[in-house]
Amino acid sequence: MSRDAWTTADIPDLTGRTALVTGPTLGGLGWFTALELARAGARVALAGRTPDKLDAAAAAIRDEVPGASLETLVVDLADLASVRTAAAEAAGLGPLHLLVNNAGIMATPYRRTVDRLESQLATNHFGPFLLTGLLLDQLVASGDGRVVTLSSQMHRVARSAPLGDPHERRRYSRWRVYGQTKLANLLFTFELDRRLRRAGLPVQAMAAHPGFAGTHLVVNGQLSSTQGRVASIMDAAVRAVSQPAHAGAWPTLMAATEDLPGGTYVGPSGLGQGSGAPGIVGATALAHDEMAQRRLWELSEKTVDLTWP
Ligand SMILES: NC(=O)c1ccc[n+]([C@@H]2O[C@H](COP(=O)([O-])OP(=O)(O)OC[C@H]3O[C@@H](n4cnc5c(N)ncnc54)[C@H](OP(=O)(O)O)[C@@H]3O)[C@@H](O)[C@H]2O)c1
Image (tube, rainbow, N blue to C red; front, side, top):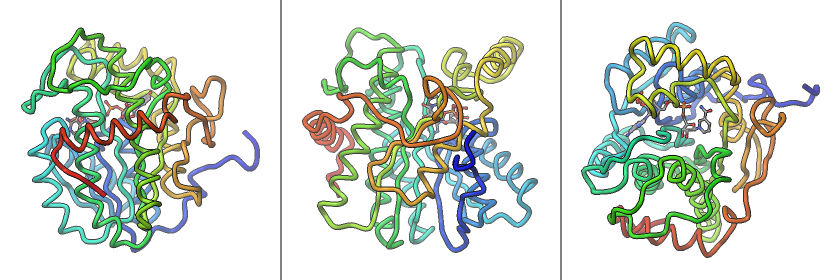
């Protein structure tokens, strides 16, 4: 690693700033992201779907950072009504400096949500799209807001953007759809940043990807649970071939705190962007397709019933 490589020591003092991180379950990227933000002095709202896991995540952060300023917020991103309820509750946080759209699922079996949306697209894109839109006023109120959305190298496998009617059932390939959701995260970020600039709003949109990091993402996707012997074996196998989860959070933290132009995409700079120190990385031509960005935005507005910014 070069002497100039970004490390968590580069995170500035975040005292007086408020961040909201989705998907902060212990062992995942969101938890390590929240931990480092809290360590730097930010007030952090931990937003996840399982109250017990939120309490455990908060307790574990307090073990590392006694006196950390933490809030918890229950939100199921796969349920648009839950997102609206959570956003109403989040209004109590006041001005928001940072929103990290981290929560996600990968390659799950076909399932439709209560809103009749395919669950990966609902969780990874439509829920975060609605949450971000509903929190925009608070991000603007901070005078210096930022949105960081987690994508993946898997955006590269997507051959097209997910622009079909999202309520219609079509042939389902769990990996193809995951790739499309991670492409959607980039299309969303680039379009959001352009719209924010056009509207003259003091908020930037960034994207980040962790390379391949040893979290529960694989077992959650394949087994729908992190409990039991099979899950432990699978978790250990993933950890053996990936970088540690804490390092996987570094691109997110750099995108969240470094002085960078809006629309920057940060990922590991090692071989194949699988691991290593974070740096600015590129995305596919499809991710930069402005027509696809605009069409996905319009489809998303219609799907979640919110027009913004
Ligand atoms: N790990 C990698 O190598 C890798 C690579 C590329 C991209 N990513 C991206 O990184 C992000 C974080 O993943 P991770 O690796 O940390 O996985 P993880 O350990 O499985 O954590 C995922 C988090 O998302 C939450 N979540 C899932 N569905 C949700 C829903 N409907 N509502 C609210 N929260 C929900 C989970 O909550 P529960 O604990 O309650 O399920 C958990 O807190 C994802 O967006 C993923 O696509 C990860």
